[in-house]
Image 1 (cartoon, rainbow over the protein chains, first blue to last red):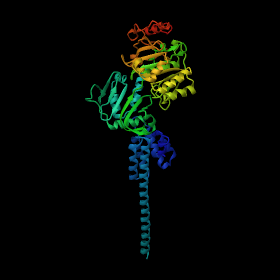
Image 2: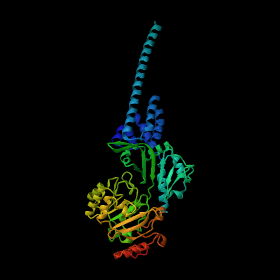
Image 3: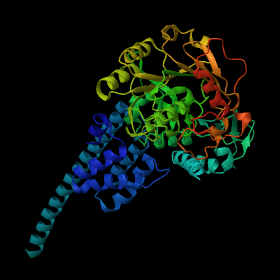
Image 4: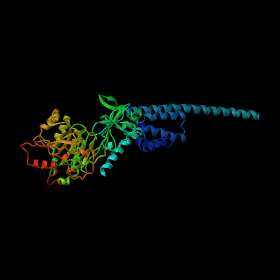
Amino acid sequence: MLETEISYGATPLAEAFDSVAQRTDPLVSGLFGYARDELATGTGITAVDAWQKAIDTFVPDSALQGEDVGVLRGLGPVLGGSGCEDQVRHIRLTVEHLKATRIRAEEEALKNVRLWQYLGFLGGIAIVLVIL
Amino acid sequence: MGGDSRKETAAEEIMAFFPDTIRRTLSRIPGVAWEKVEEIRLRIGQPLNIRLCRGDVFVSENGDLLPSVTGSYRVTADDVYRTTQLVTRSSLYSVEDELRNGFVTVSGGHRVGIAGKVLLDDKKIRTIKHVWALNFRVSREVAGVADRVLPYLVERDRVKHTLIVSPPRCGKTTLLRDVVRQISCGIPALGFRGVTVGLVDERSEIAGCYKGVPQRDVGPRTDVLDACPKAEGMMLLLRAFSPEVIATDEIGRSEDIAALEEALNTGVTIIATVHARTIEELERRPALRYMTGLRIIERFILLGNDNGPGTVREIIDGRTMKALGGVTVNAEAFREPDGHSGNGRLRDHGRPALCQASQGTEGPGDRPGRARDRDFLRGDAPGGGL
């Protein structure tokens, strides 16, 4: 969505953040809302400052893990600092990284589910054995 | 006083576009010097450089103005990066159209030149990346700067076709802006009602538009086409806004002249500026030579920097190509805007040194109106409220 705002609308970042914050799932809109507010706080605030502060505020209350936060932080220094094509490339790269971390997280989750199932099975057998 | 508040505002406006490091340094520059700042230049690894009315200086971390680089504040890559972000509102991609011309206009009408690695697309500039140098041109509105020349430019209820001829940084845009404002408002002292003005502001310098809204006062009857190519802009205004006067900056290309000619045929008055020191220099450019050959321009105003920006060196009658008078005016006004009556009065009436008619410039074929012109130069003309 941010990519569309930048590439098709050439919308200035503050307005792009606002637009994304209003149209996304409440689970992530907070991040863009914080970034928009930071950017609007006044003199001397650049996109990278606003983005980092927004992440600092948003992450503690979110489900984001260390690796995701690292990927998001990596986007900060390039936000708004280059031409349209370059911005799109960076945003796509970030999205790819986030997808990769999600897949890893899912695999991890699946592994954990299997482990618990296995433990549950073992636990059940143990109880049965004790009863016997 | 109005002038002071305006200067403070210009400084404050500019400050908002610098990161803490540069802002701290600039804020230590004495207020008197601030009033004369025309340009602020940032180059990575080089000393912070500012251009005043006369010559440039370097700035130390404590805000001292230094003639040489020793002890000056060195601009860092981070300074330039952050300034670029602030100037572009952290959205370089959103100003790519402007970047193709090498500058962006920020709120307040100030212009920021941007240099770096240029990326091409089919031999045309697509964008600029790796910005390494920035040049802030401080835009100042000096109401009343045109007071002295206006009596030469208006006649009853019409404005004369006028060309402001000037080298760079001699105040031609400032003069044009004030001429536009006053003819748009009307000039009671000259008995001149306001006229509709169409302003084609290709480089966003005259009206200093930010998001399409003029940041400078260009008068209540003025329609501005911002960042529009001159030739197309003039045609558009003619079609849609029926202006009585069309004003534009820095003409020179043949298509500009063709558009001006088209406009002239519809009975519109033209006011334009052009880069040149003298009429001879102007006529070296074929397109402009063609235009002067048409003998349509009624007044040439030649500006110089002899007594600071805004020195009117000569006003030439386009029909006779003879000087109407040499006036050394407004050099002070460019530096010290001290409020404006808006009625075409000479503000420093009684200061003859700044207001002299040149001697021996009149030819034998003078028109009767010439005597009145001379009187305006002396500041004691009848009917001018002087």
